[in-house]
Amino acid sequence: MTFKKGHKLGAKKRLKRPLDKEAIAFKGYEGQKEKLKEVPDWQERFREFVDQLIAELPKKSSNG
Image (cartoon, rainbow, N blue to C red; front, side, top):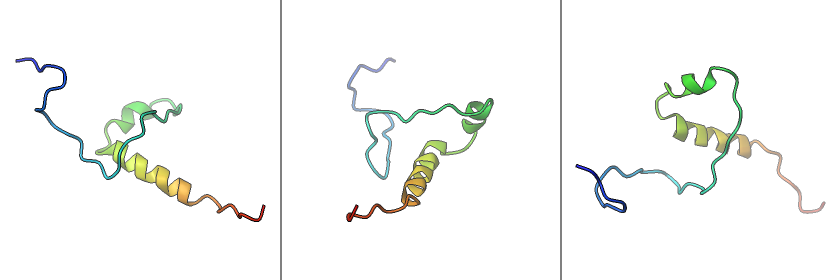
């Protein structure tokens, strides 16, 4: 049985926050891509890690 476009059946992602329409891309070291795919829930864990990196940025002062 094939699913038609726009069907209402199937698994839905349950994310904490909505995803951006544009992907974040970077070039990893050789072999990282294959190994990363083996990590359970790697995409959500990576998103949380990016939030941590952003939180570590020094706060900009409004005084210039």
